[in-house]
Every structure is written in C-alpha cells, then in structure tokens.
Amino acid sequence: MTESARAKDLAKDLEGLDPELREVLEPFDDHNQRLIDNVHPLAWSNPKPADRYHLLVVGGGTAGLVSAAGAAGLGARVALVEKRLLGGDCLNYGCVPSKALIRAARAWHAAQGPNPFGAPTTVEGTGDFGAVMERMRKLRADISRHDSAERFRALGIDVFIGEGRFVASDALDVDGQRLHFRKAVVATGASPMILPIPGLSESEYLTNETVFSLTALPPRLAIIGGGPIGCELAQSFARFGSRVSIFDIAPHILVREDADAAEIVQQALTRDGVDLQLRTNIQKIASRGGETVIFFERDGSSQELRCDRLLLAVGRVANVHGIGLEAAGVEFSKHGVEVDDRLRTSNRRIYAVGDVATRFKFTHMADALARIAIQNSLFFGRKRASDLVVPWCTYTDPEIAHVGMYAEDAEKAGIKIETVTVPLSEVDRSVLEGSDQGFLRLHIQKGKDRVLGATLVADHAGDMLGELSLAVTHKIGLGKIAATIHAYPTQAEVIKKAADSWRRGKLTPTVSKVFEIFFKIFR
Image (tube, rainbow, N blue to C red; front, side, top):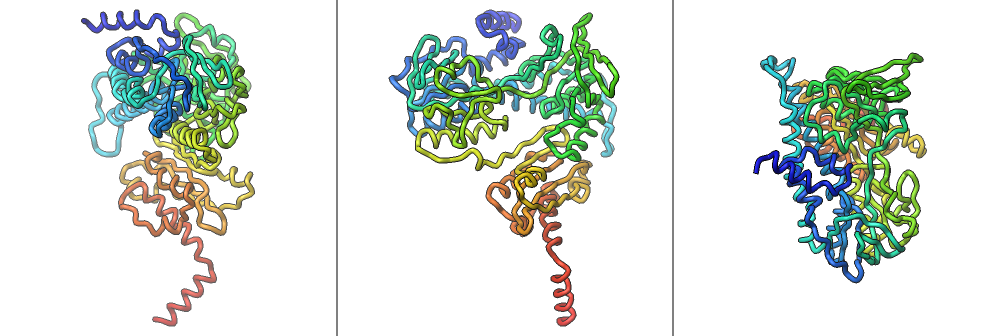
C-alpha cells in the first residue's frame, strides 16, 4: 500500500474523532499512525468494569499515568479513563515535540554561522523543514510506546478510551458503562488559553497543540505571548528561517524570571532575528488575501503587522468542564479544581493532580503530585504539596533554569537573604565554549549557608540545575558544596565558584586580622 493510500485509510478511520484531535494527528502518515495505535487505538475495546475500583483515574497525561501505574504496582485495582491521547501534553504537543524542534533548530543555527571557531560558514541551499517535522513525528511515535494503552493494560489497569463524566460522588460513566470507585484522581490537564481578541475566532491560528502539525515553514510567523512556549518556538522558527515577531503586553519577555536573566535571552532572540513587539495592546485580528493582519497599539500609535501564520501562546487553562465535577460535589473555578495541601477536593473521595490543580504546569510537577496523591488517597498519607521544591527551565538558547525562591519571594516571607551572582565569564569552560553570556545567582539565608533559591542562565542550564535543586530541597549548605570537588573544566564549576565566593565573604575583618597575627607569629 502506498503512503498516500495509507494516509487516506487513516483519515477515514479518524472521521469519528473530535475535529480538534484530528488536527493534532495531521499529517496522516505512518508515524502518526503508530502514535494513534499506541495512545488512542481506534479498534480499542473497553473492558467490562469491575464491581468497584480502589482508584479511578480520569485523564491519561503524565499525572494520570503516574497515578494509575503507581497504584496498580502496589496491588490496587485501577481504572484509567482518557478521551483524547494517552501521554497528554508532554508526549503529544509539549515536551517531546518541542524539544525535537529545538534540537533541530540548534543544528541549523550552528551550520549557518558565522562562528568564532574557524569552521566553514557557507551553507548551500535551504534546509528541509519537512524533514525536521517528520523526524519529530517519528521520535514521538517511538517514545509513545511508553504511554500506550497496551502497556498500561499489561500493568493490570483497566484502560477505558472514551469520554468520562462523574454521575455521583463515587461513580463515573464512560460511554454507557458505570465505574464505581473508593477513591478517584482527576488529572484532566489543561488546554491552550484563547484570548478574547476581536476577529481571532474568525481567523485561522495555531496553538501549541496544532503547531506541530505544520509540514511547511511559514515565511512569516507571529506569536502572541512572550512566555516560555512563545520564546522557545520563536527562536526555533527564526533559526529555521521564518521571520518571527513576538507580541506581548509586558515590558520584557519571560516576566516570571529576573529581569536581567530575561534580558540575556531577549538579546539572544534579537540576534537570531526575532522581532519583539513589547508593551503592545492587540486591538483586533483580520484575515485578508491569505494573510493574517494584526492590528495593535504601541507607544500611543496604531500599527499593523501581516503574517502567514499566527501562533497563540499565552498560557493554559485547566480542563474542568464537561467531566461532571458538579455531580461529584467537586468545587472548581477558572483556575482549576480546588484542592487542599494534601490534594483532596471538596469530595473527600476525590483528589486532583497535575495541570488541572496547580499553577506549576510542568511534567515533573505532575509526576511529583501524582506520587503524593497515591500515598494520601490509598494509604492515609499526610504528604503535602507545599513541601515540594519546584525546579523549572525554559529551553531557549541560552536556557533559564530556576529553583526555590526569588528575592521578592523571600522579602514577602520576611526572610533576610544574601545574594551571590557569578557571571559565566568567570568560568573557563564557558569562555572556551563561547557561551559566557549568562550567570548563576544564589539566594542564601542570612546568617546561615542554606540555599533558598537559584537562577542559572547558561547553555544546558536545566541539566546543571539538579545539584541546586538537591541543595534547596534537602537544605544542603554552601559549605558542603564548596567542599565538594567539581570536575574541571565544566560549566557546573560555576556552582562551586558561587559557594567559594560566599565563603570568602564570611571572612570578616576581625577574622582576617587574627589570621594576619597568626602568620606573623609563626613565620
């Protein structure tokens, strides 16, 4: 069978699916066929429900899969319900596809030059964006076996593919079948936030869920939103060759981060050709002659920008509607399901985890919260979500990684801190790599050596953050970090340099005078 024939067969099979779900699965090639065979098998037969489940999990993203697998591994009878794609955001339109694109964009950028290493900088022809996207689809399909329905069925979990809706405080219906439970976990995730911009609903636009279905590079791409998703994709598409513009109402990108950290990334995006339209107010959007026109106000003047594709990247909203939370007695708001510190909802039988119940919408946070929910729901645990120390990273070039408190967090909490900042220009490996435009900043509790927070701007900052996350989580002081040998030359040496810098600062004038007298006596 030819590839076009297979694509037609798959397209026919997908006709009964939600149109939004079909968009995610375009183009209909062998790779997406393998993906759907794993995470939403079209021929799947739901099992006959058990009399009652120890744990019912609604949602098959990271939080739901970890909850289901963890409980089943402990011997519980578990049901898992998912109406879209198992694997959720991370696998299908989040971490996995975006990092595949980022890696490809980095390779294109390195090949195009110019560079200080004496390597050839002449590149003939244009890159194959279609090949980039096909590689992404192939790798995503390869990885999807870890989240497949068959794998979770093999773990002893009853996997239900279909729309689930609570009908009572202890029961949920899936396609006409009723599932009873002792405890349940809501892990329905989040969806792209859609702004109420006049004309947007009549215009064709992309979100992080549909952008990975592109097969041709947009000559001009406009992105609304200067947060992590917007910045990562803006830099990547600019490196592929698109003329990219970012719109944001804020004065700088990545407003959650320290301004000087965001400024380094902002300069990098500008060098890569990204046009930053900051402090802008978008008034309306229109489609004209195959183009999308953005009308906006900046610095008191009305302007417009034309683009070939528009990407909306302004955050995500919790999926709380259409799952019968009202019937289950579960309270929720526009921010998500309301939970206490032990992740219990207003219905004490039901817990909520992941993006639907936290402002920290990260895969690793979903995993951590699911582990708390397992302990607290099945074993009378008393684990608290507030005890978690949450690291995160924005995967631009350079990356920004952070864990623990910012300076303003400490101020609000009434904690006095000392701050140590070490530029990467003082780290030999960073200088040799030509990647010394960054820094490490540590916030240390005043009078102690405890690390309360850290921000790192560097190549592969996320990979270096583990040591700092360990220190913040387990209260490992800078004294122990300074006493730990770090391999030379590595970028991670910046952490030891920060510890040494702090320790030298503890050498008070009085102590220095004592040492001076000591060495005069024992000459």
